[in-house]
Length: 477
Image (tube, rainbow, N blue to C red; front, side):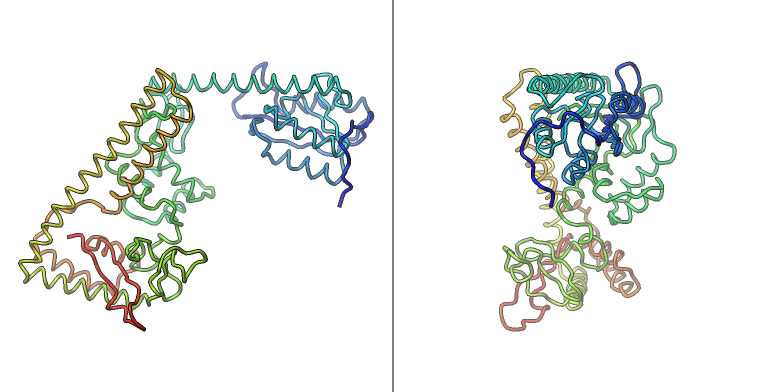
């Protein structure tokens, strides 16, 4: 373990030096105020070579901001300093090291504690003297001030573009021509297909693989979901917390967009592996507390059950056999189809459920619309007469939570199906049961979702109570 050194000035003549280069954004930049990595490195070597310093390594942080120190290059410098392999770090100017005074000073104090000093090729800074350390602190403060001003300038530019209906940046699926977004001829149609597949209920893993194949590079599901939440694909632009009409061509229609957002809200927080239709009842079966059940081998468990997970808060369902639960669901589906043919009371109850579902859905849709309108009003009010930051953030957070809760419940309800003739509905159920042995798990799940709202499994009330006595199937119509 390297020996810990006390905070002290670095040696006057360091021998081993690391050249550190950082650029916030490389692509497409130029001009007198832009110092490319090559320019920075050349200036550093003009300073270190005449002094007889031995360059140990060149460390680069390309396309990385200086506002924080969570950078691969900084981490590598820390490792070299801890191992006692360097005596100095050379930079083009102190702003390359960082644009955050507090974190920069903490890092510099830590380097000094390891016996490492800072050399600047543009400023005459000697951190081995009190005057040099004072000068460095002032320069870091100026660098942070300039960074803040640049940020404010960019925020204003983004807002002005949004007011004109122009999106800032180049989202996946678009290219820029004459400062205007136009659909990418290859990736644009692929993004439209991504929205269509997700709205249709396809697994997010398969959608991610499809988009990765089109792009020719690996992708993760979290990023694909992030893309699908971006209103730019609906032809909108975002300015702060406000969504404004855009002037570019949308890649998704309003109906598909709303279905995608509803599904995203319903699936929020659930790992993709638990939503993948590898078994027929995935996403349909739950405990009485409303927790979705997960498959473990040939059994079902509650992800929040005390007997299944450490620190569980739910009573659980007692690990019923999936095969028996599925058989009971199919039995109740067949019975329901028979009742639709012969039982007038069942038909009336079905129509009553459809009417109640329409009413409940209308209430939830109004709650979502009111929450979104409230966010727009709050953003406009804050723009004209700024509120205290904590008040604004709290109010916006409450509105977002209200929208998320209502949208999640809407997604769980699904669309209210128009009344179907009971005999036709029963015939459709019979066809489903006849084709069941030949269907894939994904096809079985999709077919069940068209008529089953959810399947509730109750915990056993007696020793070895059979699954058939604990399964309740709730139908959509």
